[in-house]
Length: 351
Image (cartoon, rainbow, N blue to C red):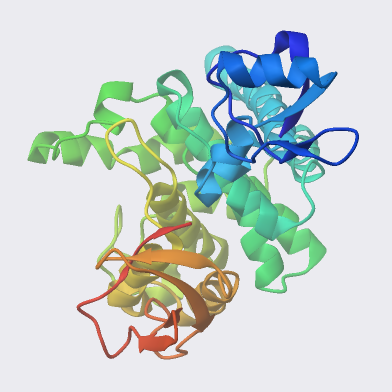
């Protein structure tokens, strides 16, 4: 709502609150679409300011409300400024062989992190960002660094290990930055040749970082973040005991960032769809000791959230099913639905 001088109000604007005269007579009802006769009436009663609905008043979803908030707009400015600095640092490293300063990367993280209340809010802000085609690869790396810090906190790692994991997140996919953008972000299925070429970003990234003085876990993560605990990953098909712990964490971060970030060719998955994707294969491919607390935290963060279900009903998440995190208990009116039992109904978006 905004209070506008009567002289600036135009027909077609919508009244945000009831308008009363000085002797408490109701002149115009809330939600009235103003016409010329209303404006003449208000002028006759010497009303000088009118409460008018603005864009925030028409927002119905969490996405709309958040993006219109001053908090988000402040975050977006700080995020974009620091993303641009990140792009410059990485470009100079790749093209001019400039040294990558761990301290500079961590400072970028602090700049963005300090613009929000906590890690949960940071993830919410990132989830509601819109993609820019010019920045997609850099933004993917930048987001992963921010997410890695949050996940490291959730995993109760030490301060030093959280910093290491954060650096891993910012730098693990550096190999993709030197690959063709049209290949990395191709909306259609890759050909076998394209897929095999794309997979070389792990070795390209390793070659870029291996002679730097960065922490060995950062270098390992660039090479191993697509290795999987069941031996199905690449480039070396390592098994659980051969994969660097930090690379295991980054593999989860990488998948989470990809699923929760909107792309020009698709929208982001909602948190419960993300959990469902992980639950289907995650406990085989990813380390259960790492992924379990992360998925539980994501699910519990959305207790009390309003959601739209696949049958178009609106409900509230009232309980998380520990053995089926993607299918919580939903209150719809006076009825409670257990989505772990009624799997023909599922959450399609957050409101």
